[in-house]
Length: 399
Ligand SMILES: *Cc1c(COP(=O)(O)O)cnc(C)c1O
Image (cartoon, rainbow, N blue to C red; front, side, top):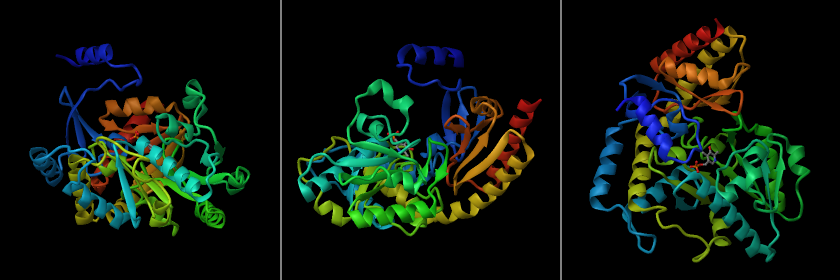
């Protein structure tokens, strides 16, 4: 069957919620992907910041195969060994005290919202608490997560959404203060805004928010779903700011391809938050994903990936900056570690499509930003190859 036939059949069967690139990806190896025509692509998207280890990591694949043969699933009515190991390991690297495993990022956000509301309810018995979230944020597509996603276009058809959500401007402390009320129970944002265009939180914003939260016993919830897991050069992006959230979320690279997310909290919150009967999941934290998370965290430690990210991202930044200097249609680079964005005046889809033809996978963030979220295991040679391909792409589009 040729590519056109595959695409036609899939389009004929699946709900049309994505405008996909016209490639059928078949296998991966290292930081490369191959389509059904055997064409090779350098992958600087990593399945949207998921495949931190690249493709075909032997240790990871073997651990999953072993676990499949042992036990896939039990339900959360029983204990299982892999998730116990995964839980201890993620607490160790996050310095949080309690974790709940979910099946996705959006569910981690749902859990974080519930945990914050329950904490506030336990404290004062009220049921009208508010959460402050940010404009241009992204937290997922389920109704709760959509309610805190500051994007009218995503929200409007599905209203009415969750009440009691107020929006402020990211990195603008005064705008957050303007939304504070005595009902505010939590402030939620991405440590580095991803979909919204790759905006890292400023140190000033982080410090200011932490102060507000401490003074008023408001919970700081940080969404680390995209920017966490080593991507910024810290295991979790907030660790680079000298602040600590009360609740944080993780997903994407947490399972490196196995669908898993998590929300984590400190003991102080856990004591007054979700109790038996308050929350649950059938799949969440089953032995299979436990083995995945546990092995991912082992490999992160063995390879010292955050340190590697710090080193390689300095090189990537330098090369991207040179490209921004070279092309008029590129106006700015921003980001931290291996979550980088380059602002362009050309239609961003034109660039990502042309890059794909050149054998380079990059994606957009918002309407005018090229997003670079490669596997964390990339080396300098891959940066060079990416820059060369992007240079070709831009040159071809400038003709
Ligand atoms: C991807 C993402 C989510 C949603 O995760 P899903 O696994 O797609 O549900 C939430 N928050 C951020 C910051 C994300 O990047």
